[in-house]
Image (cartoon, rainbow, N blue to C red):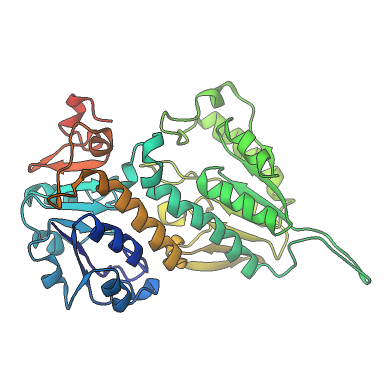
Length: 384
């Protein structure tokens, strides 16, 4: 079996879908791994490191894709790239299943079995394959570090002969994986940390990390979490009450980390222009949801905006700002997903379409759309 790994073509993408470590593990399964020259350069993995792990280095995409059985990808590859794969080949990556339906239909037309890692079921045995968690964890850490880099004051309390410097106050909006890591990082830096989330279950997690939990008390919050553990869209009345709570709290904060996302929907708008203008000059907002529309009204993806003395940081691809670690974790996620389906005696791969990991992530199979998200066949089969 031949596994292909290409250089990511996205201008903002610094990650790579396989690390030397994951290549070595794949080779250990009897798999032949072909890596495009320079694929790991932006993640600080050299061609020589891949060779040392057992990979063959291809000069270009054509040579790497020729007769490939599996293509591992970070972002959704181009249609031209997918067209070069043989029928029946497997594509695994972050395929943006909530958008770009035409691209997904192209996978089916090409006879590609495509698996979107963002749709990995949140079950115990899939934890090691959860790319959303591995990348969000790094994003939460980096968000705090980016905020501190812009913040013009000290974060921890400092007691000096010249007087005491009070600790910074940091609030985290959204207590998912990214939010919890942001809380932990902010506490390690010595800040006074608070957080809010629509899910009551988040309270214990926030407090266990040393943060104080702020939320709207409502009967609606009892059903604010999906079976998969994600936040649900809330009612307009709840949003109004939440907005007032956030507005009252933000006035007292020095740094705000925005992490709130709802799968398949635009990011909820939590911080308005008026809220930004109520904050003290020198305050910082980091919006991790900027690429999905932003939690902050004034966020501009890819920019740091100064609005009346408040800095609003909205970087693209925040996990990619830590490309070595992000790639290493992502590569492990992909390896952990495909390894159970590899026959080590023959070195071939057979995806089990009775397995919920496969049906939960599979977008296309045998020339058809099969995921319930796409109105596919697996909806009738029970899907995930």
